[in-house]
Image 1 (cartoon, rainbow, N blue to C red):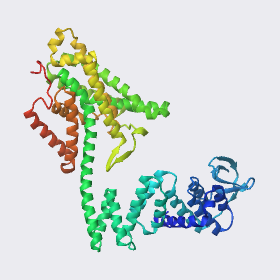
Image 2: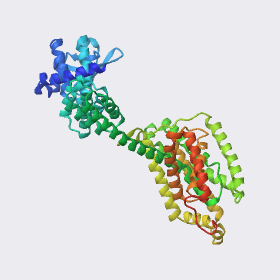
Image 3: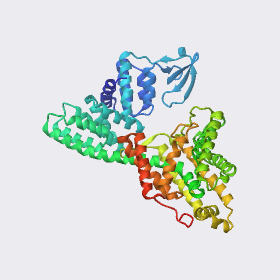
Length: 537
């Protein structure tokens, strides 16, 4: 169905409103019966009247008529829609949409149409979107007409504009009308100047394109108005673009926070350079993959809850493995940071190879649940639900971790060991137990990060390697062991990356950020927020 046919159908819709009459348009049963009686000319009028009625059932009835699947059942004169099923037709009542049994095609009377009526039906179905009871369809139709800008659609748009009750959709129809007027050769200067004002109010890049086209008008007044509107809109779009980059930076910062927050605990409390931290993230992502596979196999109805179910399991898997690493390797290397670096780097290779052996070297798909799919606009900022939930989740994890550190005995012991390990041991705190639980907590949080990252990155044995360097940069920049420093450092580096990428590219942008951190550390070796205590001094 071509746009010109749709637009012709919209004009036919206006005519049908006058021809059909209010009494006929209000009775779906009468409208449907009229489709089955009279000659082809009568059926054309009935088609347009049905389209003009705005009935929710109009579109499927007309589509069935155009496809040759609309029938009359002689036994009770019911109008039904038939769908082939073997040698029989499954029947649906055209008026109600409910099942109406089965029958052979010979037992039914097909409602016949010719080629002209098929074109009329296509036009009518296309016009139905303007008066559809579904607000999303009306909004989509308005946006489509805004871009098509065909003058022949103006009567239908004006009718839909007058009938629309929803303020947002009414504004969309007004914008569509303005774009059509601006493209029309028959519109007056006053109409075009008003249209320029309406399109400027839309405030997006499509509007900018139309204003720039209008700025080439031969009329001096229209050219001046369009040029001024385009200049004003360009400034507005620049502000929105900066806001979009800030949102992207916050989104990236939330990912860095999730990946780095566990490292901030182990590095700050224990002085361990854990190069296997990225593999804890990777284990969390693979736990999510396994959970989804089990749910899809045995309980597909729980798929939307798969991410929620995976969270505690990922925390436990990564946390338990973290405790095992601490008890078997790290405990013998305290006070020797370079040795911990080499040992954990070797462990990271072992874990990567183990995952390759179990799951294979290829990427694994972790699907997003329905509540993490799609996006919405805030002004001109495009916000995806997936990224939004990750930001919320990162802040929630951060808040819970702060509560654990400040309100639980484990948190008190961790802070004591961080500030002065010998004194904490002298006060009776079992520092080896605190070390194991701290390492397990940091690893468990990395597993939670893996659940979130599985929604935005490839789940592969190398997943963690892409975040380990950035995580160390965040921790060092924010202040080793300081969680609020980690939060601010992740956000600042995320925003800086997103503002640099358009000008320097992704790789050079990261290099510039690294150079900045090196220079910053030269002035403040302990980061933005340094820990305080005798042991630190």
